[in-house]
Length: 305
Ligand code: PMP
Image (spheres, rainbow, N blue to C red):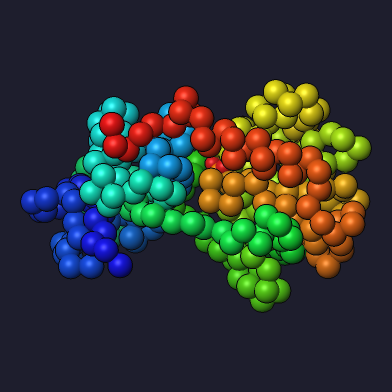
């Protein structure tokens, strides 16, 4: 692999924030970072298409909201952070498809406790690499998923709109998915309604209408919002409403959305075949429209000016 740079800044003694991933060294004091000890940070996963960062404004908006919710002050302006993302993209020569992982943590702890007052300034680290995430077969044939027994952490405990680095709830669900040899899992709320997948939002289609769970129990995905916009533009009725597993099994179509997965059809849930077991017509229309969307210059920012 060609040299890959990552960005790292915080309360650590480091001369150049652009580190070589293979040969660069981090100070051992990073082990005392509140994120390393407690998952005390927030993140964004952002796509790059044709060397352009997709929907950056939306991702930065969500990052700032997550930060405010957990009382972290992002140590850059949005413009400053955008410049860093572009510089890293240029250093890694990302001209095609890529992925950015942007992490902001509470920072370097002064002790081993959890008091948020005993922490230095926030740490920011960024990975940006060339990537093609899912095989084309996923889109052509559709995915097989299960419903996890692990319920999604209720909003009364942690707001789902904090995109926290603490993904243990979702990881427990992924462990169930691994045992069932499926690539994604559906997570229910503690009340038994469908919320989302482990790292994606979920939609069903019934009688020509698109349905997706409301905002209260999900991470509001940037891709989800793009799909709801596209439904409006394409004249497809779209409703944000609760539904349970029975409605999923009886749906005409099921699909998931996420920055990594884009729009991926689901054709089997808990071993029930959805409709005729093939990606549905509305799903395919939305996937095609989404792929047009990622190519529109107004939706993205070039890494190379
Ligand atoms: N839900 C969860 C739990 C996620 O981790 C993600 C991925 N960030 C999503 C939904 C989809 O969000 P987006 O479309 O912004 O990637």
